[in-house]
Amino acid sequence: MHRWQLTTIVSLTLALTACGGVQIAPQSQLPKALIDVIPAKVGLVIPADQRNFVHTETRGGVSWVIALGVGQQQLARGVLESTFGQVNELPDLDSARSSTDLQAVFEPQIEQFSFATASETGGEYVAVTIRYRINVYAPNGERFDSLTLTGYGTAPAGGLGSAEPMEEATRVAMRDAAARFLTQFPDTEVAKTLVQGKRLQVSAADAVRALAASGLRIEAVPIRVSRRVDPDWKPPMREVSSSVQAPAGS
Image (cartoon, rainbow, N blue to C red; front, side, top):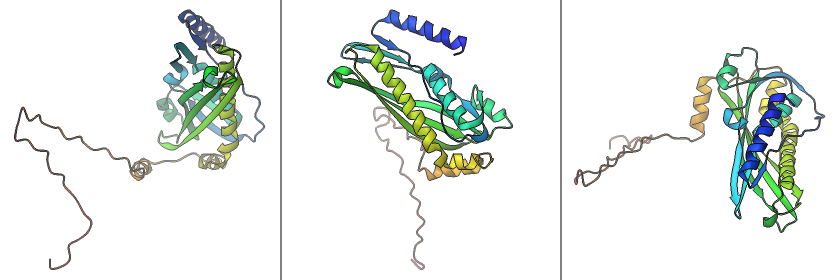
């Protein structure tokens, strides 16, 4: 573990302990992956909000503070370094775009964290669910794909207010998510492209077409004038276009 990471963890733990409630900072513990490494050079971008990700919630009058930032970084590095021949960590996507020798760029994010306490499971165990989204970009910065996966973890309850079972369940959820990625990623279009030694390619035109195909529409919201200002105001009529032509001679 890097010295700066250890300092961050100790400082965070002391700060959280002073706040009361239940505070944990789970670390990712991944066994060595027995998979074929893809001989590709990829970039890893961990956004600042993910480096400092903290989930806070109050259940039954108990405050829970779950710091996932350091564990998220460990998980992302461990999974990608197990998958690819070379991983370059970069501070942001702009830095990734300026790199000329990358074949792809990965941006992992925690999309949702949820848990069940021992009091909610009958006192027998605690449970954790973590949903991840991994945005995959071509070297030019255009998004090639967006992968989602969910990790699940449980641990025997060691007491209704104990932090250790929740921390263990979170570590199990992280390992579960990592295992899902490592076993399912080779079947993705991203992996099939990189294993051939190719770079991911997305043109600006491709990105616009993908956006249009997604059905996303951005429309201006009409301004509604208060009738106290103009009693005669009416909303403008919408223009309706049609590709159906009128019959000849009508």
